Image: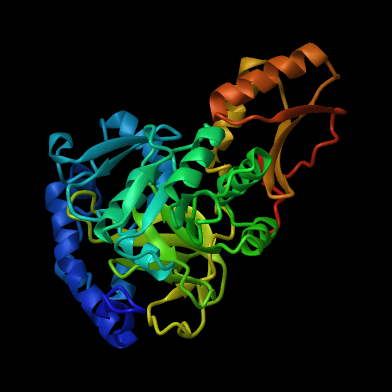
Length: 409
């Protein structure tokens, strides 16, 4: 590490990085094929030695995150994609879906230390970690990265805002990791309680879109906030650097942008689905289609990091969307409708003043009792609050959409 960069990998020539990553592909394909039941079947006809270029990689089938729920039902607990047996792992998580996510025993397994370093976290810092510690992996992702940097961690989790504000006032952490909206909530609660939380000067935020009103709010409070984009399956995919121009890709993965619904790479600059190949020994995901949209950002970052940059999270390739840090799936909406014998409906997601809002519009006559019952089911199934509105028969668009994200990015 030096003052500006986590290691020399970040500043190596782009051609060298590309060669070194592609040279590692054959061994990882062989590892996946011989160590997992899923890839043994998927790559049965593949000669790993031939997968040594992006063109060759692009010929392999994608593995879609959206298919993991059913695949894991067929073969517990990880759908046969794990190379390390469950008892050899450090932790096993449960993400919404549900999808079970393994964490190996390697140091900084999720590769979050690099993103934290880029945001200014250094040895000796104290950080409050406000990602959930309950079943989901985000808190562990960032805690292990903070420990790699030799930072101390306050395990805040989510909720209990008054207690957390008092802990911040007493312990004076200099950094925050968590969703951006929860940091805003904590600051507003501290103002209400007349507690000083101004010790927080930097933040790495993830788990939801970092919308302009929240960015401006944090900037006005003297907090330098940096986005990190990752998934519960892969860890960090890309992160924001001090240049604040797009997100720089993590060094230990191969990133492709493909046309949604296919595995075909799109030209640089065109929006497509983020597909990632990892070099994890425990969970060797090959051409893993995240379901997220992004695009390659041309040129190198002014910060000196030379890796590929993407424009950041630009929505979902399918109709799945993320609300307040949790994914909402079309099949969840269908389950709500089936439970109450409802027909055509559309879930819309909006954001006003930095707070996400869900509304389920249903074609049927208005009924306050039904609305209350449907809202309860929506919260039970998605773990999120939403409002139910009724619409006249035939008034909802006939375009096949179940979920519509109206937020502006």
